[in-house]
Image (tube, rainbow, N blue to C red; front, top):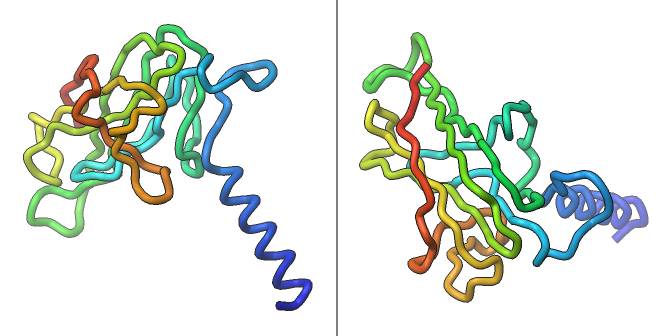
Amino acid sequence: MSKLAFTLTLASAAFISGCQSVQYYDGPERRKSETAEVFVSTFELLPVNIYSINGKIEDFRYSKRLYLVPGEYSIELRTGPYNKVGESSGPTYQGRFLLAFTAKPGKTYTFQSQAAQARMNANSKLCVFEEEQDSPTAKANWTNEFRSPSPEAMRLTCSIVDIH
């Protein structure tokens, strides 16, 4: 491998690994056990991403998880744009969910839709689940970028979609 290719490989690896998680608090890095871990997006039938935290709009496109200090949070999540069922063009719609919960140290928070279909509809619901950060039954993909609630996870609250 040439020096240039090796350097580009290292730079790419550093960029990718640096995009995995975000320290969403001021001050020095805290131990994992002192923070709450929040997975930014879902990878399921009705995919969503975090749009805002406590009313502050953020861009988490390249982040996979956040580390928050314990406390009260109101998190807005949004779907991608959707067309009406059976249409491939025309106006698009977006689903919005607002979930409020208390984040605790040493816990992981994941979001999961309670939708019967991959299509968003007026009954689509999104819930936030809490479990231990190092749960042995955690459902994570092979890169650990996405995580689904384990059977032992506790459902905290749910939100019905607001379509706009």
